[in-house]
Image (tube, rainbow, N blue to C red; front, top):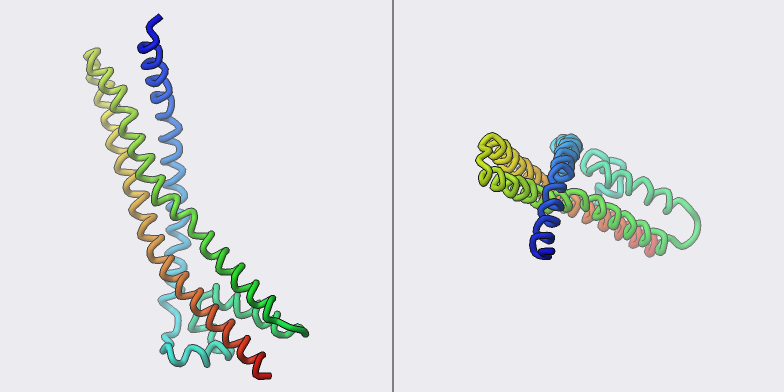
Length: 201
């Protein structure tokens, strides 16, 4: 028994069998990026409508109810929970610090899907390119030009889809990261204002 030929056949079968899972995964990534696009543009529209606020006026604004029109829905939700904690009796320092850390962690965890899309999109596109190229070369050796043409179409289209998913995901990730950094900065500012106000009292 030729061990080398057996291993080559086994690897060829494994590689060929991965084509349809890769195509399915790429299709799912396209659906996921479309869903992310809806949420992204909704948040972008919200931020476009926010009331401009100079940096020197933001601390005073965060201490009033007028901050709702100047900061995002994440910061407004955080301010509401912060107000609930402040209204309760007792020492608020630990509860407020825990709230800030938990909220920050959840916001960064929400970016994991986009980070995965940035890497997996091009990787699956490359897999979708190389797998049919192997079967296409085998078809070329047998003189089957129809099968070769079909495999080349699959190879190039999966590359395009994978790169498109990765590019769009990277754009979404970059902008959303900037928005999250701004929100976290505002949350930290609101927390510091609350703790300093409690210390003065």
